[in-house]
Image 1: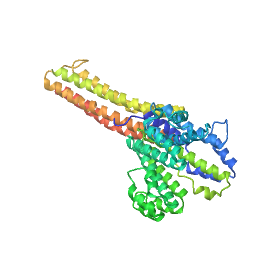
Image 2: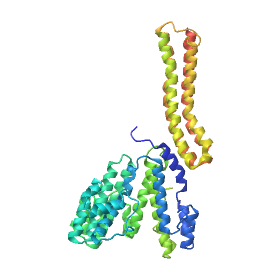
Image 3: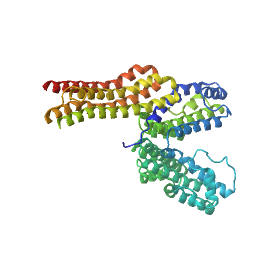
Image 4: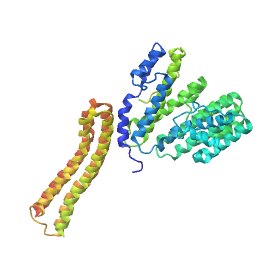
Length: 322
Length: 156
């Protein structure tokens, strides 16, 4: 057997997929008259744990429920680590900045990572990089040194964000399951395109692009950098010749429309997993589907809090997995 | 020597079809357990789907009994020549081979259909028919093995 068998876990996930949010349920949320009504609909659906009905708590509980469920079903969680790498690298940035500014706050870290934020802080504070996984050691040192020498927080962000993309891509490429590989590829490709567009709009030079863009299979970085130094239209022309040509129309509308397009692309790509009974794919797809619905609910709730018109919120709402 | 081959045939039918069924019901059982963890009310439905790959083991047992009843172990007369022993052996092979493979393939269909029942319990009837289609080939192999064993016995 080429891949480990996940029959029990997939069958259990099939039942859990019944409680995923559907497009019609999102319409119901959007149709709620107020933020409070919207929140009540989610609570009635079983979101949260009843102890604290603040949106942040409810969304954090839902994310934790997903990871607890997966941990309950599989012995080895490492194939799913790639989904948490972004959190690890966010925590690394936060820890470097915290050490630099002597900030002891704990609420600047994302709790759901593969490495304990306290350990990351300790490694940076003591300059004992061996405490970190190998993939983070050199970037942690480079990040801290850069901040100490340049005092440029944005440069630190660029360095660590690229390292995060490199780590996601490497983990995706090494994964045996095509869904995890696809996640790595799409995450890096869409991030590269967004960075290139922002760089073009803010007039960043080639050196910045060399630092910020991460390698992936579906983009020719040399051409993308050339396009980014030329300007926004050149980037659109370049994307027209890639497999992401459908995104150009959205990119011309706005960056948030392009981000939505990128998220929808991933969700559409993982949808066939709803029919696979044996592999790790449906579990990975379920995690991504849950992350997608948590992100969408966050968009709806923040839209409702800020009294945005329903149509304006609807434009940002992602497609659902089921 | 003839009896040894005849016995090997009978043992193969029970062995391979039994292995197929054990693997098949095991896999379907894993899927059933996954569904029951979340929704115990589906027990009777997923149990039936789990049992479907188990029939090949019974067919293998049946063929083994019929063969043993004809070759002098539980009745009948022992094969007098190597050729007759080999004939019994080959007569048992359809059930051995098809039993093994069809049980494993049927379990794949059963696992997928358990997933279907988990999502749409009202579609249980259709979900049961799909893996049952695989059964057709196990039954055909069973028939051929029965006819062949009886034919070899009639040839004397």
